[in-house]
Image 1 (cartoon, one colour):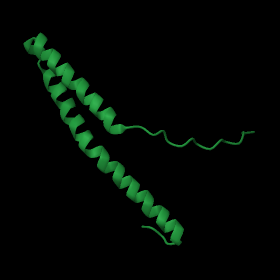
Image 2 (cartoon, rainbow, N blue to C red; image 1 turned 45 degrees about the vertical axis):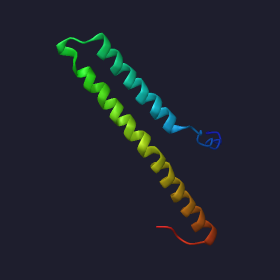
Image 3 (cartoon, rainbow, N blue to C red; image 1 turned 120 degrees about the vertical axis):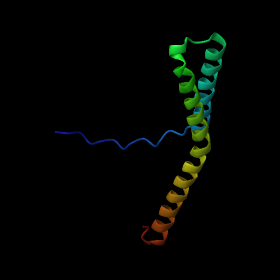
Length: 89
């Protein structure tokens, strides 16, 4: 016998851009520390890892607002289609 399943809670609201900025700042801080401290020749790849983290974080800061706006538009289109009784592709 299975019990009735409770409905899923609504998604938690977060500031995704701020999270991406915090991660980007962490990679930048790590890069600065490694440049100050210095690394042996065999571990210089860590500098490129930090640089890649910074680049990906900057891309996320640029991309996330566009993603969220597109999702909001799509949801508004779906709501409009439900209200008018039309079908959405």
